[in-house]
Amino acid sequence: MLLRCCLIFLLTLWPFGHSAAEAPALRIITVEEPPASFMGPGGQVDGFVVDMVKALQRQLKDQSPLELMPEGRAMLTAQQENNVLLFSFSRTAERESLYHWILPVLQKRWQIYVPAQSQQELHSLADLRKLSAVGVVRGDVRESYLVQLGFTNLVAVTGHQQNLQMLHSGRVQAIVADSLELAYVLHKQTGLQAAPKLAMTLRSSNVYLIMPKAADLQLVQRWQQAAKILQQRGELEQIAVQWQQRIQQEMQITVPRDGHILQF
Image 1 (cartoon, rainbow, N blue to C red):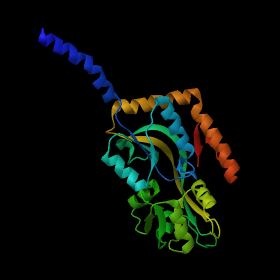
Image 2: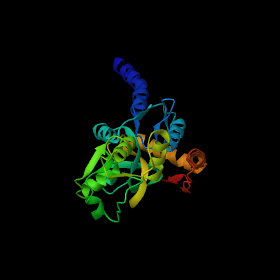
Image 3: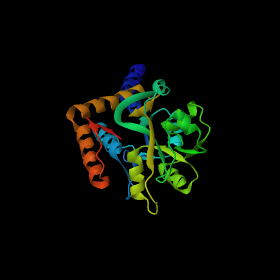
Image 4: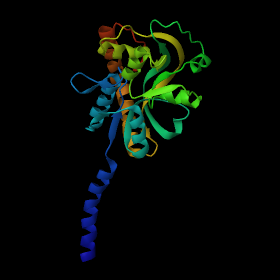
């Protein structure tokens, strides 16, 4: 009789323990990459993809805080911890097997910029190799790409603002970015003489919300399902349209859109 009572008591506790296991703690980490994600004037993380993530959180009733950190540190955190949602990161062959690709959110160009007054002409990667120094953001997919190609003239910093400062001071001859990132950084900065000019486009990539392969599978599936629901309801596309309009109003830049995906 005593054994039967103990079994009944344990069974009544089981659902509570099981529910807790189904909802593991999650860290949500992004990087400074305007207008997808950036620190707003009020000290709150803002951005096009930030709004998408917040919509997914509302759907999931998730209240995890959004953390903003340098790209290199964000990638290292995802290697050390399993239940991490990262955004926004490019999908590449090297990364394919390392992450769950939750949702595509934008397309990003890989572009090379030089000072406005520069006479330097760049037509190929061979030309880029000849420069004494090229500024990149540490942990950015474009840095990884050039490192894999054997570039030894890269100067890595934590953000695009530092890259611009180095370009204007002559510490580097070119930087790697895209036009929209630079427009947002320039919009915030004062004292810069002129916007850099586009010298060359290397390629482009599709950019996603991602989780490490070792993340809790139920957690991954919950976020994937929430993404499908918001896509079907048209909520993600509404966010994209709102940001198209905001970028046009603030920067006078027309951003192409394919459904909910903006093309930077």
